[in-house]
Each structure stands twice: as C-alpha cells, then as structure tokens.
Length: 418
Ligand code: AMP
Image (cartoon, rainbow, N blue to C red; front, side):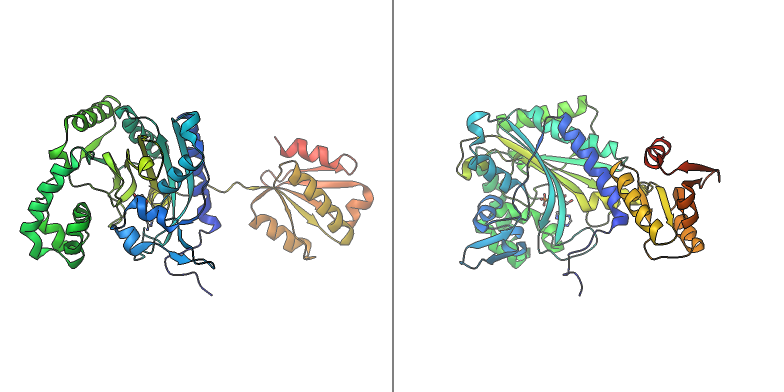
C-alpha cells in the first residue's frame, strides 16, 4: 500500500525542523497577542464556495468535495481563513470584543498537480486579525512574518506587496480591465474567456504562458485606487520602511482568492524553483459581513509550512538529535525485570533511558548502546544484583562508578540530571 498521490508522510528525521518552526512561530504569535484556535478539517462546501469565490481555481478545480451519507456536501478545508471567519461569527465573538487575533497550524487539502513544493495535503501556519482597520496592522503582519523568517535564519526572501482596492474603487478598475481584456480576447485560454464575464480579476492570476504574455500590460488595481485605499497603502509602505522591512511593490500580485481587499502580499523565495511563494496574505474587510456577521475589517496570512521547511533544509541541517541519557544493559531475567522497572521510573523523571528486551549478549548490548549514542550505560547482570551494586559507565570518559541498589534511582537522577 502506498500513500495517495500528492499526500506524503513526514518522517521522524524531518520532524525536528517542523518542531523548530512551530516553537518559534508560537512564541512570536504569543508575544504579538495571538491566541491559538483549532478548527475542523471538514466544513460545508458552501463556506469555501462563498468565501474563496465560485469562480476560482480552488473552488472550481481543487477542492476535495463529497456528499456525506445524508447527502450534505462537505469539503476538506483548502485554507483556514474561511473557517476562522465562520467560527468568529458562529460564536458571536464580535459581541464581546470585536478585536481578535488568532493563529492555527494544520493541514489543508487541494487537488493540485503534485510537484516539489506542491502537495495535495500540505500544512499552513495561519494568522488572522479581526476588528482593526488601521494600516499599521497590515504592516505589523508583514513585519511579524519578516521577524519569524529572520529568527529561523532565512535570507533571500522578498516581500511583494500590492493593493487590490475596495468596493469603492473596484468598479472603475473592473471597467478598465474588461476594456483591456476585450482587446486581447483572441489570445486568452478557454478558461480565461469563460471567466471574463464572471470574474475577470482571476484572469490576472492565470498560469498559462500565452495568457500571461497577453495580459502583461493589463491595468493594475494600484493605478485605480480611491483616496482612502491610496492613503492606506502609503501608510503600510511608510511604516514598513521605518521598521526596516524590505519590500517590492508588485502591481501584478492579485492572489488566487476572491475575498481580498486593499493590502495583499506574498513572501517569495528564489530557492524553490517554480513554487516561489512561501507565504501569502491580505486584507479581507468584506468577508465577515459576506458570511453573515457584522461589518468587520479583517486581515491575515498563511505560511506554506512544507515549503518553509524545504527552504530551511537547503541552508540548515535539522537540529542535532539529543544523545540518549542512559542505556540499561540487562543480563538475565531478573535483571530484565528490574531494568524495565528502573527505566520507567527514569523516563518518568525526564531521563531518556532505553533498554533491549531481546535477551542479547553483553557484547551485542554494548554495541546497541553505542549505536544509540548514549551518555551512560548501566550494567545489570545477575552478579551485580546479588552483590547489591550496579556499575554505571560514562561512555565518554570511560569512568565507572558503583551504585548501591537501595539508592539507585535517586543516585542516577542526581548524576544524569547534571
Ligand atoms: P494561499 O492559501 O493559496 O494563499 O497559500 C498560502 C501559502 O500556502 C502559499 O504561499 C504556499 O506557500 C502554501 N501552499 C499553497 N498551496 C500549496 C500546496 N498545494 N502545497 C504546498 N504549499 C502550498
């Protein structure tokens, strides 16, 4: 049996880097006032269709959607924002305090064409802020991402930022875009031609090379911003400059989801080939209302956890595995039982202890102790047990001490906890 295409195991040798990222991210989120939220993996399909947009790649082509036994249409979450917004509304969080900051880490599912850096089950680290309209919050999220990547020792990343405008400036942009697209219609792929009426903004996100070339000079949202959106974007840029965060204004950045308004960004790397986006985010000031809540400004980002680890693996070896504290060499049945009982007590005291239950010879057990890279070996044979003394050998210095059976565990804890 094999994993499904696009799904993969993350094996123990890769886990230390994942844990390093989780630890740094959680620590930073807490310092910035975020609270962890855990949301279901399965939601009603309608939630994603309405928030991400019916006419988007994710909803049209990539979602894992199926009817459950009663015929309800369900979808494995392709992203976290929609569910977090649902939760914010469902639990009326706005009523007690509209300002909320959440983070979550977990798997997402999209049926994309698998390749390096693109999986059908992938992981995201997600952060969302509700109830703050100020542009400082946009800068703060980009600053936070920058800080996290710095702490993880990453370089060569660049923040691409853009403004997608708001419902006030969208109509004039859409008109300019439609006029432009009309003149290029013959060069667009079938998908884009179909999307012209329904969702022309998505054409700017098309990956087909011919389309990309045809729309190279398309009007940009940035050139059609209303005064408020322009001021907002200027504050974001000025603040990032003051905070020393490098960024590139990228007029062509539109992101693949419909709910974005105003600031949108992507953190890109040059080291992952085609899959260059390590994180993406933006404002979605209309989504809470759209999904049935009160008008609430909101903003968030998602880091591609798998890609982030892949970038780290290029520069950073996984943190070295900690050596074992103690290996118990148990020779004979009585020693096996005693060794087992001691090992549990030591494990309980936080001392990494292993033994071998196969009844192997002294030589074989010492070989195993070396393989496990242990600091100490405790040698328990029948003789030692009858004489009431046990030998503890320091594998680095080769020094040996005799310990009394009666006080063995507290003595070991004292020595090994040093
Ligand atoms: P999005 O939700 O599309 O804005 O994606 C946010 C981030 O998630 C991207 O910048 C990628 O790093 C990551 N990501 C999105 N789709 C995939 C995928 N299929 N496989 C791995 N990472 C992904």
